[in-house]
Image (tube, rainbow, N blue to C red; front, side, top):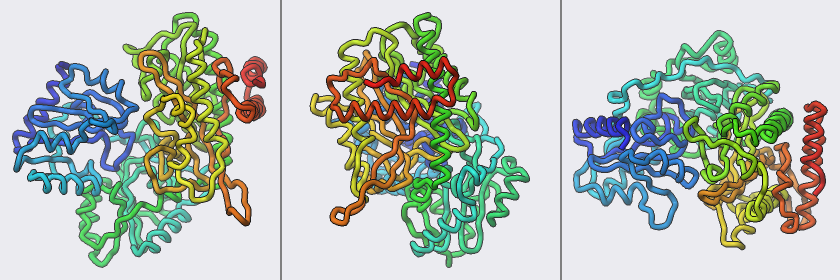
Length: 593
């Protein structure tokens, strides 16, 4: 057992005993229900040793478990080994959920506790109801991280900065007006926003508080009478102050938010998203509340013409950087000198050569051979494999640019591709191409398209356990809603202006992983008086597939033409950014099949 983890687990259990808590649930999120969080909130990581972006720990006085999804099964198994924390797999038949497990472990009058600042109102209510049905007691005011977490990182203090309207395509004042129009339409006269990306979008404000996502830790209260941003004052300079003032927004300290909400007039009707607002802050409001999905998610998801044009240009610069990266890989893989970590370092180097680059949009996944089968693999100096002149290399990476966010996955052979590798690569490619060329009626949901990416695998008794597509922000979160493409039902429909990933995969444990990903833009399709309006996708990402891995005999003539047309577009759009040697390499990679 890891001595460090054992020490931390025991410190938590001692804190539990001191207040008669029998079990505690620790999510891997922050006070804003974020997917990616600053180190200040990584208490779950400190207790368990697991570092994935999705995972919930449950600790009792005798046992501890970590629940995570299929993206992290292999990573969690490795990180939790000998830690005293058991791995529990989500969404797997026969595996107990957190509440099912707790129902077996707890006894009458036992106390299940959480830090209500880390749980949405909806999740806290569900836990309270669960406890009531099972004879347990529920407490939402247990905050052990504030007391036992030794050497806790400080809350970020980086300066906020303005995202210029020439990139955003709309002023903060205009966005606030549109948000308030939706709030008033819902019957409320105020809204309290807690999601960091929604606040950043609404105010055209960005920051460096969270790795890979340019957001600022803050809260935003908007009403017909007053608009207030709660943020640590050290983050706000004169430029930001002037920008906010021009939008009619006042600034108060981040830690004053609960006190402010306590004083909101009982005559005010405040709109809250119960999936996003914390239990603690929702209960601080004593006025009338309307619960519903935040209107900002929908407004933010549909990019305007300037954002779309900027994203297209960002894709060109990103594609040029990838040409240089993959050329470097081809030239150096056989030397035996470079590892998966070096691939990430070189990726950042080549992206930084382009204009408007502000960092990666997530930690690069560079998985060589069996590491490619770990869906969210993260290479370290200790774990990194050394590249050689054979096998598959999966690279999932992205960049943050002032004019757009990118996310691309390519799987390439470093030499001697096997028949199985080519077959599986082509199987994934067929599903990827099916999504890219899809045309569908207005009102279609992502769940209705998901099977297009899987049908070729299903025919062979193969599948993948992650979603096929997620929404992508504009110089914001690489994962955003409300839309997605996955088997799970989601009422959000695909609409013009939404940018979504297209990323089917196949993962063979201990052998290799294959994933192919582009970002696609939802645009208008055909129209007929009889059948109405249709939508389709425009592919935004610009980088060739690995033709060495394509089994052409598995492709239809339509699919061959689709690949050739895409490669022609890639060549034409990227060549102006390349020198002669790079352009020649790209021309070879985009030859017609």
